[in-house]
Length: 420
Length: 168
Image (cartoon, rainbow over all chains, first blue to last red; front, side, top):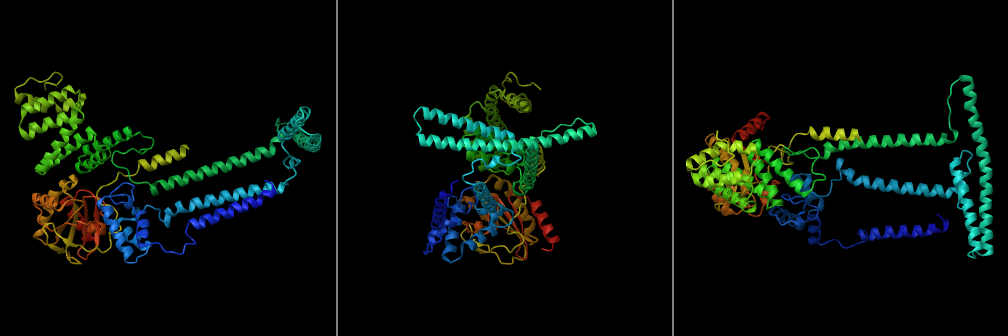
């Protein structure tokens, strides 16, 4: 960087800081209105019954209740902190969308500042070191006695090419006499300096190269080293150690952070979560989780999971059929007519959405047989169930019910149903 | 990276599945917020503080399947403790119409107070997110348990026994 550019950077920095201060409202003398305060608080309070929505963005009854409470407390003159504390004391710290400023969560706030300061410090360090090398001395990096010969060769080739280019441009009439002479003078001077550095480095490397030979003669070993790579190799080793150390620290921090911040898995949920899953894969996995929970007999929780699926995918015939079946089972256990009616409506809806889905036909047929005593109706549904090609395991499990229905209806068993 | 991967797998795979029974709440261990309001039958109700007996505070909705699952268990719990007088039930409607909740409670056979909470104030006071949610309040007025799954009469009895054992 040239020294004359420094004021420009200073001006830019001053403008940036001033803009941040003005934009941040530091110089604002007017206090926000009660409505503005309430709106600001509502924007950082999570809707209790929603997924990752603020109460300001949600119309859920719980969000409306929280908004009313926030407005009431703002009107009473309570501070933002007091209002948040009130909500945290009831819902827990997760009710606030912003991470906490205390405890482990404070890392989220501190880390970006630390990284930004480190980045700025690094930038300043690099710029200062460049400046110390000297603005006019373009070859300061190859002036050291232990300079890398490869770098020396590269610089020599560059200057030779630069001279050739200057000759060509001069012959083509693109350079004036004065400019050409100035360029030529500059590059020849630099080449001369490089030549003197090269001879010094060569001498140094020769003396270093002699040492191992002497040692070899005394010890009889066949060790050979490349002295030109000595400092570079050591630097590479240091860099590699630093990188490995940083990776180890990162790994340790990750392993500590995961149990601290991750939430518990749902039953049946995989360890890898839902990262990189397509929407259809996520739907399939949600259905698998719900089915796994239902298989353990936790019908209430399974119903909640299926309801979650339906809130995201209202047209999921599988979720409708399974939720309908769970509702029927709970309804019969609790003698709830309304629940059984609701279950049948869901199963009918599932059939409308996916007439070829075997599960809904099986469930409807079972309800017709067990609840209504309608064997003929059940047989019709079971015929559709068999025609939909259910898995052999499901067909085998359902076979006794099918045999009962077709026997009571006086109809022959469809092909493929085990006779028992 | 292998170490990181193995560490993450070990941590995540050994974490227990989410238990939808008793969970942490900032309210547990603290005095219960006041419980007062209008019942679904239109009567004013206020729970004394401290209540002097164990109180099961249950948030429910008629449309909520898990609530329907736990309904008969609440009836059983109420029946078992009504005579002894050592515990009582108070229900609060969550995100439901008063008429639907009243009809549901009548069908269930619930005879304990059911508060309408049409503005969601009681739900907010207790930090309720979804039904069913149940709080157990000790005779001295402290919240001793917070449950976010269908409860059972036996489960509530166990919580009461545990609270008694710890001096509640």
